[in-house]
Length: 279
Image (tube, rainbow, N blue to C red):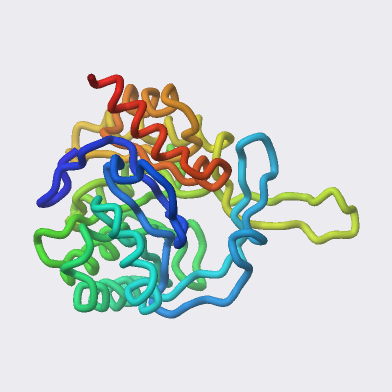
């Protein structure tokens, strides 16, 4: 996959990369995508408390997860992720278009020479609902980020898992200047703990249960004649077969997140398997 000024050496990429990423084989990856950050940090539960395994290879990422701020990412986390020598993309989100513009401007200024690009994580605007995530909103958010970035930096837009609407949202991203699309981010769900007295937990579903939905979304994007952007498939990737399935329905690369959280080192192993198959 070609993204801006770079070409990925491997279709397997790591998403939501652990800040303390350690181990062998990560230098074989196509790219590393950071955990999603905001301009200002948001207090909340750390990952070992806020991410729950709710079924076999399926995770609930709680809404009250802690989110790191862009400044800490640049000062502490980014240097550690860059040591593997593969392109690093910073995943960002914001409460609205002005927020996307602000964080993109900061990252261009403070880390523009250290990163391959940004990933815009599309979610509901602050104070809004899913109905506010429209093609126009996606276009304006994408355009706001694109206008702050150097032309050589890539811009990936990660879309929600909505098969009926994802084509329109993707067209908005394309019109706004995106370099590539990613399908998909997490699905909003509710989980009832075993303790009958415990409050329901809300958050985003990821992992195996999301895979069929994400595959459909990739297929929708790949079969739209108006869309010309390359696609990352993401959701429930645990085996080489899962990688191949995403490529079969139209993705050019994949992102592994839940699989890495459940089995550290999985992404590097999958990248190695892909390279072996090519040989």
